[in-house]
Image (cartoon, rainbow, N blue to C red; front, top):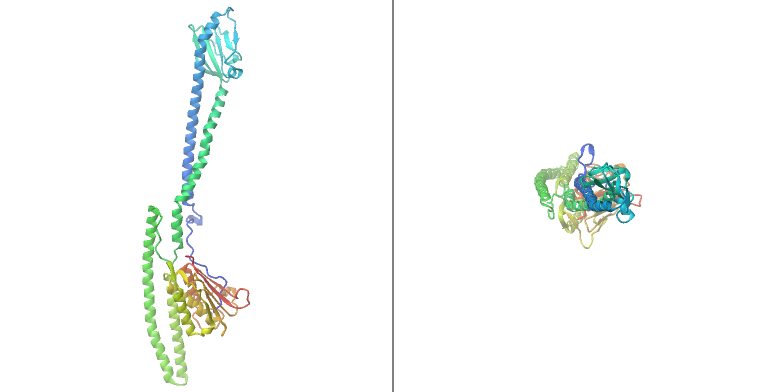
Length: 468
């Protein structure tokens, strides 16, 4: 077996990265990220707008309620103050009396009554002297950090003013605002988390379709299953299926042409080979017979080369992978029997699992792959040494033979068309190239190693079958 190289197969054609597509090789953001950013940004802006509107409305409501309380206090106290002033015996002296309830309420709401000259006739304890308005002033005003409301009585001879600290309103606003924003602030991250979960769930269909397309290679042109896809993605899947159907038809026509061409080549090559062999027999011993033998040998190599080229064309353009698992046992046994008849059968040590072989592979392509690996091992092994062939239940193939070790740089090139190792065995240099092409088209991997693991000699070729 032309000594292979350590895991030299690049594997199946890499699927294009769905995240790439930006210029200069930069990855474009995913659809889920873009939708998440747009929806999250829109929800955040809406939340900020609603929060601002709520705070404005809350501020207006608090100010209105405080003003109503301040005005109501002035209107209730004015009649009582008039009676109190006119019933007392002293003449125009200020009388300071207790305010509203306990000291905390007195600090929050105070009042003062003054005459036309501005003398304080009646006031609550602790009223803000510096914030008392001029005599006769009525209505709403602010001064010295106080909100005040003034109203007059007795034709303007008395003016009642109630006071309330503006800081009290600010504290009330902060307290109410925090109570309002706390649940809203908790809703925002919960909403963003829900958006992320919903996008992840709904866009999973896109990921499924992407994975189904990525699993398709040049050797697998079966239709994509469209179950579970939303209508928009099902349309994309149907278009991909139609494209693959057209591609499969084109490849089928190409394979048919190659098969017909190979068949047409076989006939004249076989006829020429027969004539050369007849000429050799008729010529008898001598130079003419030797030339006839050389012609026959060349025609034989040409026949084998045309067969290998046909196999390579089929491997690179055919439908190697199938949509469902196939039984490959019969194809494997047929190949082993044919190869054994053409070589020393005792050299082949074959292991086939009792349960048979099943894999999503075309049986004909699998047979070509197995034949090339086994024939290559027999051709390049040390004469007379055994060749071990181990088949796995999933279609995996492992072939080992005894041979001189292959240099790593040469091993890496053995799967290229017409590449040959240092062995002098007759061959076309296409066996491992065909095997690699089929492995790649199947979605599997061809691995080569020399020497055998843990030994100083030998060559190993292993086909790792694709997963179902």
